[in-house]
Length: 109
Length: 111
Image 1 (cartoon, one colour):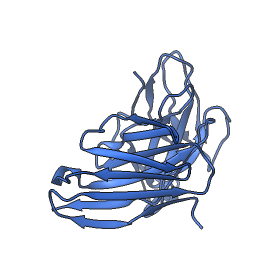
Image 2: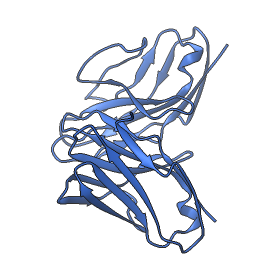
Image 3: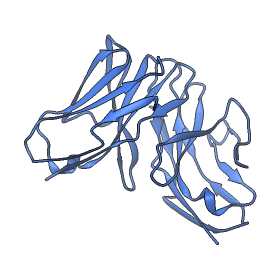
Image 4: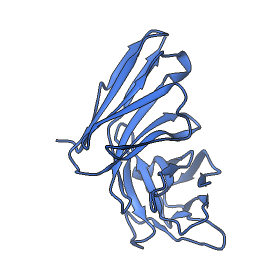
């Protein structure tokens, strides 16, 4: 069964500090992984996906198949990064889309 | 205009009442989903549909039903609402490539 685990419900860092939001997945096939972000009073939106290998708003995420992880990283956190972050396993091969429990990131001034 | 629209945005209903949440999309996607969001539990999948004739149960379908009236419309019903169905409900769509587009959510309170 496909599953996404985000072990940290809350994460707090100071502005300018590095940040890493952890995501581990369980899936027997070839995964399609995403990070979604939900800013205060806004709808969820895509932040990045592993297949595009982009850096969005300074965030990157690398798929590690050996560790079944897709951690989200940013070297210097900004206050505007404060939001709820969800890791998701995507809908290839007629699978549904599953989300982790989410991590609420707070960046303190 | 928003690509994914949910109605109503807020609803308070009494225990035992039937309620329907509606979702419409202009993305032209075949795939649609209903999730509920609870603090500490994240987004949990209730039902999903890959096309008009395809409906599938998600992780927590008990107490819910859905109807895919058209490619653009996917409704979620609570046949007899109970207080632990109080939550924020999200509709989403995606294409086969994967990026999901979400509605703004419906805040449902069952008293």
